[in-house]
Length: 200
Image 1 (cartoon, one colour):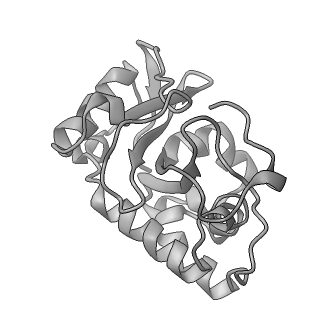
Image 2 (cartoon, rainbow, N blue to C red; image 1 turned 135 degrees about the vertical axis):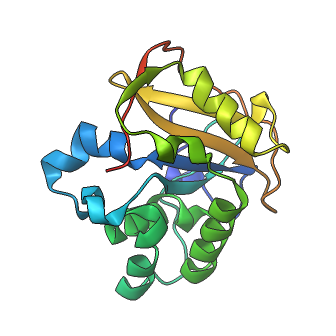
């Protein structure tokens, strides 16, 4: 994505669409979560695709850290999002950076995020992996297209980081209907042998 438009020019609720970002938790844990001792990486948590965030997006660029009159979320609110986000800390950070630009209250933003997460089918095939594999990023994209018939290739992008599959990003309207992504979002990972860790 391109750099964000300066927050001073951002008004909550004034954006074009959302990007739903799903992160494969075992890969994040391998890259940085284990080194942090993140509770999200405990095998008992059984995390696969977790919600990284629901991001307001312009057709070019995106707003961030908007000045909003809405109250910040309580610890209970952020803790209650950890089942799909992996941690309360991530839920807090996502509100501060992205939710503040949504024009919604914190409870409504979290509710919308949970609804968006629930609307996208996460392919079961990845949960069945026993061992780490190397695969083309395009295989991950195709699995999401197969699991979500309403999606087309221009609505989904897969990102990589340090030779690992990182995220699947899906573009949604303000009503959470799939739509084509803008140029800033379509940056498909081109790796033919990206690392993919199994659920712990």
